[in-house]
Amino acid sequence: MHELSVTNSILGIVLKHAESNNVQRVVSIKLSIGALSDLEEEWLQRYFDHLSRGTVAEGAKLRIQRSELTFSCRGCSLEFSVAREDLEAALCPECGRNEGSLISGTGYRVESMEAQ
Image 1 (cartoon, one colour):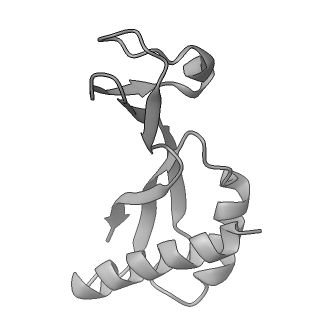
Image 2 (spheres, one colour; image 1 turned 180 degrees about the vertical axis):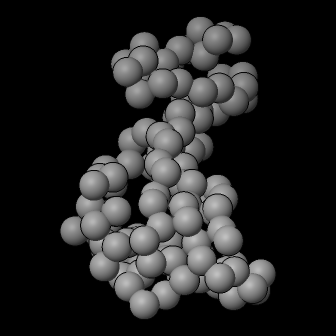
């Protein structure tokens, strides 16, 4: 259910940028969502459709891509990316340790928006 509050935040960001750039209509919004995020794409779009009614973002489509997980090795400090399906075998490519700290992969970010 937290998709509702996240979607409200996304809409706020979009509307702020639309207003500051004199946008007449938002067509689509590109979102990056971390691979470990439990946000469900279907519910994000449903909530967005509901919340955006009567705004310049009404009818906009969310274009969602999942981002990889980024770790920092506790042994050698190398930052490296890991796909979600490879999480169990997430070894540092530099020193081979399995002692990484998660840096990113759980949040979301508005990457861009297509507007008219």
